[in-house]
Image 1 (cartoon, rainbow, N blue to C red):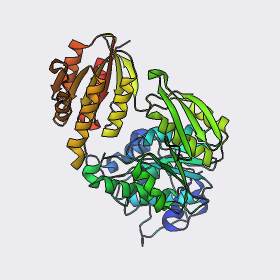
Image 2: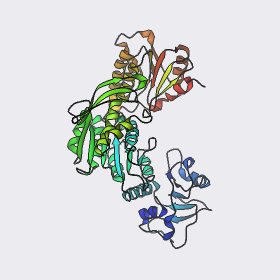
Image 3: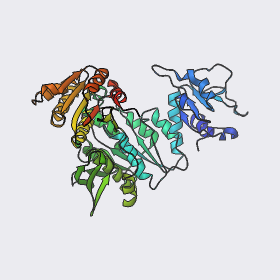
Image 4: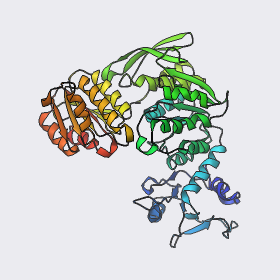
Length: 473
């Protein structure tokens, strides 16, 4: 269990006998404090965590990591280099821990703590499907091992260290999603987490606006497999169906395990059948074995998520019984929720985020469900040079699937333009400015038999559409 002694060892290489004080959690949001927690005061663009130190202590925090002086009455330890530090008297709680940089201190503590534990770490990255893969991998491994995973989207230079500090002596596996915006970011996260197994989902164009190009995204994601230990202790689990990911086999000294729909992969699937909201059915092949599976994941594209989780289970020594039990357990379709509108229409809420890949997958899923199909598609942001191409491709697929198209935002007009090129009826296209206009349009036009897909980037606030139309019990 993480203690003050571990924290002090990480920062100053010494600690007194009284430092066995247990730290129950580490958070950057004072509203998430539990008794005995460490509050890390971070300076953000909008909010400075130092303003909430007193609130954190009121909620039960034992310690606050800060990088500026905090007014009395709080006592503290000055852990900055060269500071006069008296470790002879017992610390009083709650206690201020003064450092030069709270983020760097948090990362140092997390790296130190991870190295104290005998735990196998599975790192997951890719453009689309990281979170659902993380959840399903954790569920599969949880059939055999005590397993920790990132909560929500704690997958960056702040969230991942916080997750590492939640590891305990009892954990045997940690499943960590790793996000990417700039080169070197995943390599840094791997230096903290020390993964032995790395999973890459795919390489798309989301975040190309910041990364620069799909090639740059591929290089950034490849940092995960480059950071793995050499075979046999390190294993890279790669998507054979994605050429960008398949080529990563040449960039790692770890063992390589391919998954996909191609029989050339080590683990592959065929006869994939979408069952609408009832899940998917497929046939799984591994070495000389063939298994017929049905899992509760929506959309044919979800077969890749199932393959990734099964692959991790196989390379980690789980039995097929454990793997299949994990694949069939729990609710793994995190990002899509089906709810009823007041009109009786079925709303498919896939508003967490959007990229060309994930939107195509959502449209393919819509195609599997019976009813009048309404596609409500908003701008896909951060595509950079792929903005026009990405929206145009979505328009071409939407024309094949949807009976009615509603676009939200300026970029989504490209979708409507592509749809018109297919002779889609003009009276079935509505181009709207924002989510409020979409709400008003749908309230007037939805029917009970409609299946409505709502999809767009987080910045478009498409979630408001679902929240406003959902039937209230």
